[in-house]
Length: 623
Image 1 (cartoon, rainbow, N blue to C red):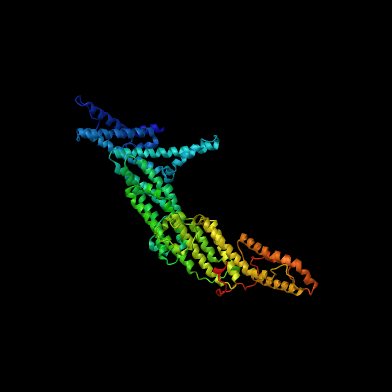
Image 2: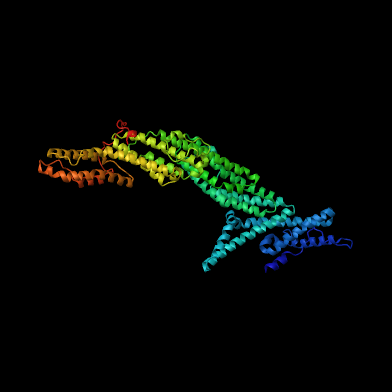
């Protein structure tokens, strides 16, 4: 049977006992009353057609789905009915006509409640917060396709975008029409109850699916860091999704549906979102309490705290916009409390990090004067901290900075009058690096050979500068800071070369033109060979991890030693050969070959370092 025929059959007039037949007009009735009568009867016709108590068809179908045009007529006539009721109340609040209109209005509101519930329940895909929040994106995407030549694929995608957008828009418009009609008819409470019940379940489900759950501080303190780290990662993703889609989409939908009433918009959105939002933004406060409760925690936790701070701070404008209602101020307050707690934890972690560097008591003696593990780990940490310079400037603002008088004069190029957040942050980073370098300077004392001490300092400072150059530290500290430390690297390197290879060079005559006897020449060759062998034996275990620095040091040594030895070898070797012979164990090529093999760390001598304190030349007085 055709649907229209079925509807006609199911809608056979059925006059309920509580409804009166149409009123009969008398000649004395006013034109206004006649008009009111016509409006009431016109409304009665469509209202009774969709009365769920008198029509089987009305019970099993949706008016908005079955016939959108008729649904809009229904809304229009109910609105007119309400206006007529307002008029009748002012004329005669006890009139039979008003009583009939009121009974019709009750039937109409039951119908609209059913429609409102059905639309909200059956169109969750179109009313999903993500779909609602990305409608503008869909519009932009649709527009972008018009810029390109049409083909089958682009038409298909474009049509899908249009279809989704139009469906979502239609559903939201229907909801608004019903809401405005019910609110205008005095049934706002019934409308709001339906909306809050359905939409709150959707938001709560969305928060649950994002793995945001309520955790007590006591439970958090018992959790391992690995467990907590997993929850933090989930939380970071949850904040992103919540602010971009979940809460944003719900606010857009709520604003649209209840556009006619600011009070209802605020009440609905606040009640629907408040619980989930407080749960979301309360989590960082719990994490902060856990970390602060620990006397010592790995420095890596600092970055998780910074990620959480960045997540809230980066979304602060969105938080203020989405939760702008006064009744949602508790959400903003919770987010702010978490920012404060995170700030305190981060500052505490930074103090612990500095203290760990200062108190490091490891007796590790790095093979061959290479880069110390403390230098590697500390610079990894410091360079990563520099990636958070924007939020660190806010977090550290107001906390006492390091005393500038403790920094070497002109340590880096920041004016004393410059109190900007960036300059204060630069001072803090420069101070952390200085604390590290002072500690490394003391660890150099573990090497017995003074030359290896300088090579150790060269390698470690080179690592510090390299990490600074390839990270945000360079922008924070400035080019002047880098230049000064590069100059210090050269100073350490020159001291190493002078102490390690100067004695070898000293075995060759300073005055190349001086006449030497055969015995003196032989003695010179023997001294050179012994000194070179001794120096090479000590330095062959040394390492220079940085490839450019390694080449530079080797070339510098070779430039000073090889030409002088080659000249002496070429001009004096014949004297030795003509005499007793012997004494010449290295050709210039041999010397070059040995020097080219330096700093690979493959030597076997262990005499270059021990754990005894430094007792020789003071580095500070070395030019």
